[in-house]
Image (cartoon, rainbow, N blue to C red; front, top):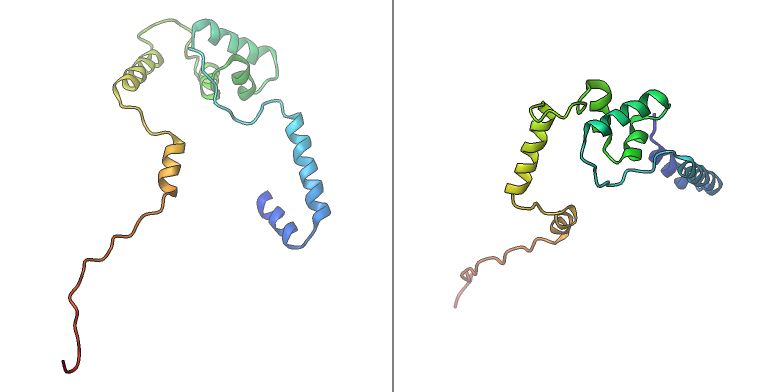
Length: 145
């Protein structure tokens, strides 16, 4: 089975411009009707018992997906899954496993030096590696001087 990208490349190779135009219109229509936008970085809210209860309420009373709930309340989908499937974050207990893990992660973030951004890593990969100049070597002459 071919992927959509492979299908598009095959259409392009065959010169089927009308089919490519139709495919582009379908993509634009799908993007316009999506209920959840393409992934974007959110400034996550701190999980609280109130927020966990509102997630459960949205899950029970609407037909929203976990991703849609996550966008609505401002957390990532993994947190929504933890609340719905495992009942996490429903109490304000500082000794709960999720609270301990959060505190450890915060401490780790404060103690570690800041990592390079994705852009910096990509730029480092794009820079050409300079070849070292060969060390000077002696000349060897063949024949009579």
